[in-house]
Length: 577
Ligand code: ARG
Image 1 (cartoon, rainbow, N blue to C red):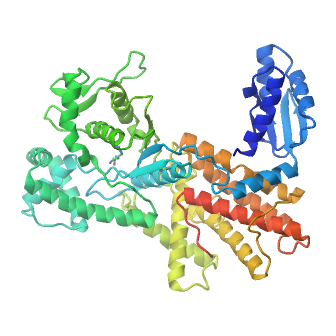
Image 2 (image 1 turned 90 degrees about the vertical axis):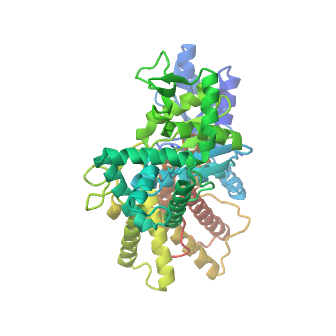
C-alpha cells in the first residue's frame, strides 16, 4: 500500500525512466500551491541540469507521455519546468477507499519485526518532577505510540535518576535527623531533599558525609539500601500518579541503579582492552576525534574518588538494552542541553563496540526549554520550579472554566464533566507542547492553549466531537454510515478527500524524524478542511443517496483519522462535549 503521492511518484518515475532518465527524478509531492494544482514534480529541472538541456523541453516530453494516463485529470508544465498534476476523482476515490479499508489507514508497517527502546520521562527520585520532565514525557510517549503504530515493538523506559549523590545527601540527612530506618512519606521527602542539598552546600563536612553515604549505598550497605528502597518506592508511587493523570505510559520502570552490577565488570573489560584509561586519577574513555571542531572531553567512568557518573550508568544502560532487546534503535528524549553528554555516551558506545553502528541506531531527540511569558524557563509565581501535579491541576481548572464559558458541559453530570475537563486539560497541555518543533523553545501560555479556537488541543477535540455527533445524528435519522463505503468525489468533496489521502506521508515524516509536530500540523489542517467541507456540502440533507452515503463515509473516515492521530499524540477524545 502506498500514499497517493507515492503512487504518482511511481507513475511519473516510470515516465522518466522511459525517457532514459533516472526514475528517482520522478518524485511527486503534494503541491505547495493547492490553488494551482494538487501535486507537483520538480524533477525535470534536475534532469535538465544533468543533461545540459532546457528543463521545459524535458518537462514537455514527460507531459506528452503522461497526457492520457488514466490516473491523471490534468498534467501541465508551469514556470521554468515544474510539472503540475491533478488526479481524477475516480482515482482519488479508489485510493481513499483502500485507506479506509486498511486497519492502519494506509500506513505501512515499516517497523515490523524490529524493536526500539525509548528513554523518556527521566524523573529524579525524591525531587518533584518539573516542566522539563513534562516535555520529555509528552514527546517521548507520543513517539512511543508513533513507533508502535508503525509496527515496532516500542519499549518505553522511564530511566529514573535514582543513584547519584542526591541519594547520599538524603541518607545522610535522615541519619542526622536520627530517622534512618524509619519510613518517610513523599511530603516529607519534598522537604528533606532540599534541606539535605542546602546543608551539603553550606557545610563541607556534611558534603563529605553525603559522598561517603553515596559510596556506602552503592557498595550495598544493607541499612542504607533498605532506607533507599523505601523512599524509592514512595517516590515511584508519586510519579505513577502524575504519569497516570497525564496518560503517559512506560513499559519499564528502570533507573540508573539497575545497571550498578554491570559497571565494575564493564570498566574492567574496557581497561583490559585499552579502551578505558586512567587520567588524573579518574578512569575515562577518550572519545575525541581528529576532525572534531569543538573540544570533546572524554567520558568519565570513575571519578578520582571512585564515584560513578551520569555517563557511566548511561553507557552501562546501553549495554543492558542491547543485550536484553537487540533493538534496532535507542531513542533518548531528553533536554537539548544534554547534547554533549549524549554525544560522549554514543561515541563511547561505538568505540567500545557496546553498540555497533551497523546494529543499533543511537539518537538523542533533544527538545528546547519551556519558557514562561517572560521568556525565561517556566517558574511558579513564587519563583520556584513548577511541579507537574500543580501544572496539571492548573490546566484542569482552566479547562473547567473554558467548558463553562462555551456552555459545553451544561447537560452533563458531575462525573462526566470532570472527565471531559480532564481530557480537555491534557489535550491542551500535550498539543501545546507537541505542535512546536521539538528543538525549539516555547512559551507556556495556559490561557492560549486551553482555547477552543485556534491551533489548540481543545479545538481539535471539539471538531472531532462535532463530527461524531453528526454521525450519531445520521444514525438516529436512520441514515446508515455504510460499513463498506464507496466514495463519490465531487468538486466540493475533493479538498477533504485529498487531505485524508495525505495521512501516510505525514506519518512517515513524523516517524523518520521523530517529529510529532508534523502530525499536529496535519491534524489541524484536516480539521480545517473538514470545516470547509461541512460548510460547503449538504450531508444529511443531500438527496442523492449515493452522494449522501459517500459524504457520511468521508465524515466517518475523518473522525477515525482524527481520533487516531490524536491518539498518536497521547490525546483522548471524549464521546461528547
Ligand atoms: N534524570 C535526568 C534528568 O533529570 C534525565 C535522564 C535522561 N535519560 C538518560 N538516559 N540520561 O536530567
